[in-house]
Length: 245
Image (cartoon, rainbow, N blue to C red; front, side, top):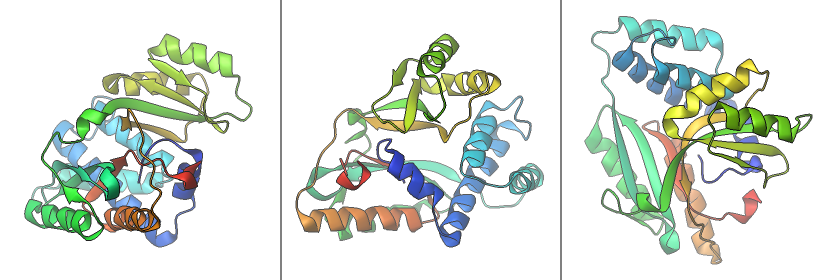
């Protein structure tokens, strides 16, 4: 799950167990299926599908899996029909949380999400209650090792990026308008750059620290429960987690 872009968070994603990796494959598989349903199976004419394929490859989903999902989705007529629903709420001590889901049963998913908020010291709110604290950006992370910072920044800005951030020593962060992510990513890829992340994210404008041990424990448990739920695609929050420094 994603909070803000700390390299340790990305590394933990890479080090997932086989069981957790299988969940990642399942979640991305749903995204691919919905993109194919909405825009067709050809990524050259379906930009959303192209973006999700890039995300899948960054998550180390094998090409065979991607092709199999696309083939199945393009021929599927009576399979599960998924809808995208976003929930908002508060974690312990008012941490802002956005939960993006893909579900074939909105009552089940809403009940699960509400339960996780309630169980771990938070509460689910109305649509819009916390999203004003976030901005949607396309986010591209490039490992900084052996990469010329100035050359990458020039290439990114020329391709249409809106910001270039160097706060983390391990990665360079490139931000784009959400609709420009694919074009900037493709331009940088053509220039020979590779990415550890290339996706649209909710980026918080401010962060909140937790100092109470029970709050920290409950926030971690809440995020684990969201991550373990197959209906939940992404979780965004503004917790300034010291473990991610």
